[in-house]
Length: 196
Image 1 (cartoon, one colour):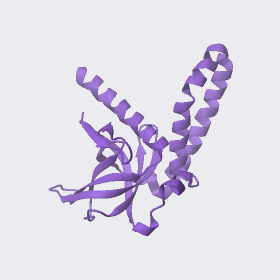
Image 2 (spheres, rainbow, N blue to C red):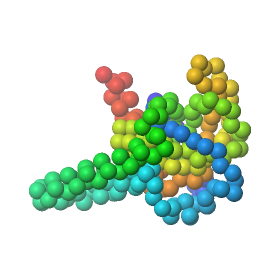
Image 3 (cartoon, helix red, strand yellow):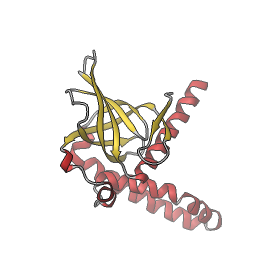
Image 4 (cartoon, rainbow, N blue to C red):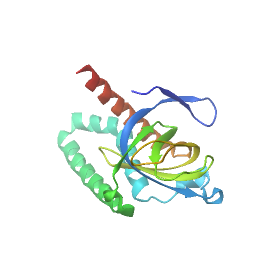
């Protein structure tokens, strides 16, 4: 289990934990002028990635209400659960059709709610801007973020030539919440494995 990561770009500094993980990841360089501003990024029309993350966030937010309904009206709760499963299946099908995502291999990453580090085939200069798309297992939740390359170092690896570290500079707060919950769940699994 990895240690804390000091993150956050505004106001007080927040602390996030980093973990080693395997996710589906792809990225592309973007020009400074092509970077959406924070407000328009939050308001962007949904694509397959932001749709799955938004649904995951709404599931988390509505959990208490669902449990209340389940206690007083279990039949209605069962029906709502089936509807929710249908919606999730559709959103995952949309996600997997995006840009050949289904064929992409899993990547080993070091990830937190403020940045990500991963191996790459090519050198990317420090300071470059990237659009980073990631799919978090096992729920296949897709997130889109923009980040700045902090460093790109050569590595001795059979498959890759460099390791990049990227700080997020544009991430929707609800996506950050989804990412934090994913990291916490992964940490709990690691703790359980280590204690077995």
